Length: 139
Image 1 (cartoon, helix red, strand yellow):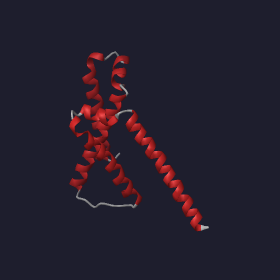
Image 2 (tube, rainbow, N blue to C red):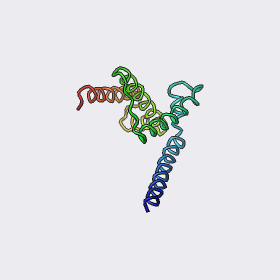
Image 3 (cartoon, one colour):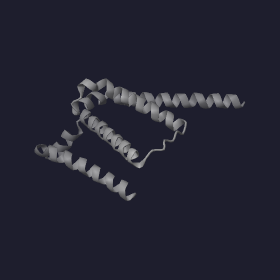
Image 4 (cartoon, helix red, strand yellow):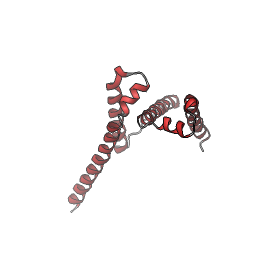
């Protein structure tokens, strides 16, 4: 009976993982996030690097979470990795907003078409300052 329960749990876990993974891939593919990201960063020649870094990052952190892998690093290394992860998430979010044209629509509704750069900088600085306050003050 125990083997049947374990087999059912494995089957449900694999099915759930496939569903979530398929949804993530569909999300990234349908919205053309990676091509938009390379367009924003002017790195068209490195599109395969972007794709493989995304795949390997997801795979590594899935395995690390699954097997409860803990890496003991110096605080400076951890801070650098956190900075790189934040940059990646920020550029991924920028690629997503570029893909669905959030900023032009927002600027048009706020009647700020001529101030697009200021609107973007206000959002970027607000997010950066908010993250730093939360991180440094541990709120």
